[in-house]
Length: 608
Image (cartoon, rainbow, N blue to C red):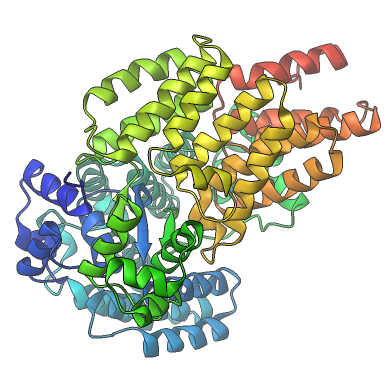
């Protein structure tokens, strides 16, 4: 069976969009290297692959990465630098950047571009040296696209990071040369609409662009245009459950409406205050300054080759020597891969995957598809099911299923899981049968020993969804202890990983949310409150807001069950409801709280 790889997706997009290989690879690599990547003849650095994906308009968050520890080291260093810049500890950021320069290959234009751009950010934001920063941003652009000019924007394929670099340049142009960048507004917005069909990419780029253009509009006293751009930015973020830049947008909206539209100001202030109070409560900074254009929104799942090999070997009961003999590889090679000191060659990696019956390449989308449109369908189905709109979700799922290749184990697993989900939620099968179907779905990519040894390895996003759904079914059959065992073991698997929690955001977020509820129902109130606090902080740090309202409600209700006193909880319930409204929760999500509030307090929850 031929696996659908990232090369297939790249090839599909090139043909679909009629993109020339020369335009796609300009400044990155040769067209020969691209051809080898597409054909799977070579394993490229994921920095290069991600940039190619970005230039095709696809969100890197739709890609699961399986990579080596040296690449992960560079990623971790970038995350450290980003954290230090957020904290405004510029001297430390400079030090880590210098360390990065020694580790990275600066002959690689992508690493050189990153270093130049980051030094520009430090000079601009840390020391107010805007002219020098502007010069570095130009050099950063030229490091990859030497012939780039803003006036000829349509001649180029810009990835997400390149578009952000362009915005940094324009921002400094505003400061250094007093350029009215509103002149580029239509050109930039049209480019975003045409180039970025992926909703996640478009949201990140559009929100930053809306902020930057709004700043220019305010500077030129065009408040109506600034308000339109601000509302557009808020809509884009909340439609996708994102907190990224949302505090600044909400504050700007209040500034633009305070003396111009009393009703609009009042309505938005309640929602802004509800979210701001949560940030303050959890000691998270409520950003009031200019948004950080350079801050990336990286939320893709990452798995280490070293962990994968170690986990599979341990579960199979092999020693390193036995595995080396079984697949015909020197034992020192196995040891070096597991210790993160070596990246397996293509043939070695293929032997490992074949021996353990693992499907997938170093870069893999959540489903084995060649079109981002199908990934958007999967995302929409997930969004509908999270809002309990199962009938609408199933209609979309049936359309997606017809377009999926059943040669892929991941696709078969997704279909089996989703059908079991609908069978359960629409009450078409007894729960016991659904449980059996879910277990069968899990075993499509795993074996019996994996379910028995849950907690000794890191599951994929989809496998974690199956385990969470199995927990729901056990609870429905009255076996909530089995639910807790499953979820707590699933949690152990992620806790043992060397990859940061943020790079397993989707499964960990779902896990925390469900565990909070189960702890409360088992009268483990301290555990429920502790995990709710942890989940709220986790979601804020991951810039996700779609579950915050529910978690505030769950924590408040747990406090009520623990103390028996609900008289002092009115404002917390109102806070949770307003956050739900802000993040555009569905009516079925809000209805239970609205009805309970009416019963408890004899008034509507949205009463002034």
